[in-house]
Image (cartoon, rainbow, N blue to C red; front, top):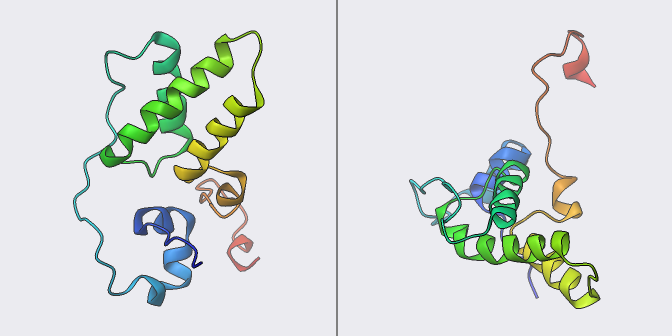
Length: 125
């Protein structure tokens, strides 16, 4: 089974687009995607905090990711609030985070440029 394709927006954030632009030629991805936006009003305060945390942790999320993100926020809030956390709850949260592109494997591929590099030779490392 082939691996799912990485969205172009995520590839640009991770630097994969710059390394292998040929992989992304001819892609028919939606253009002008709306930003993620604020958390829905019907979420609880803990769920809204989870929304904010996900938005900061996964900056490639867009408006079309909201439905999956809402359920991930509900799960994350349950993990924070419940006294006993079940393995099935953690498994479901892990699956949601993975589907949003935030599993540790994906995160290790993201390279955030450091704007405050004082070493002029650092670009060659």
